[in-house]
Length: 100
Image (cartoon, rainbow, N blue to C red; front, side, top):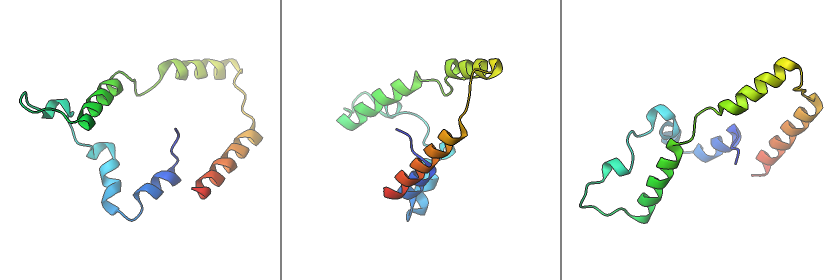
């Protein structure tokens, strides 16, 4: 799922503090698993968060294989960009954002 700046702006509209909470530098440090002690049972939500955190830890921030492939295609002149298609996609995205 792609979230554009328009959609993220709608989500944080009217809640001035919400935008501060979603910025990476303001994200709480540590994980759900590290905040639990041996005597406390995790709720289903917390268990799901532990699974999600461990899955995210395995995902790289940058997909080097995709970046390297694109760099190679650009250097060989094989990566062609059609300006009309880019403009059409931008207009479709703009219209989709307005509908939501």
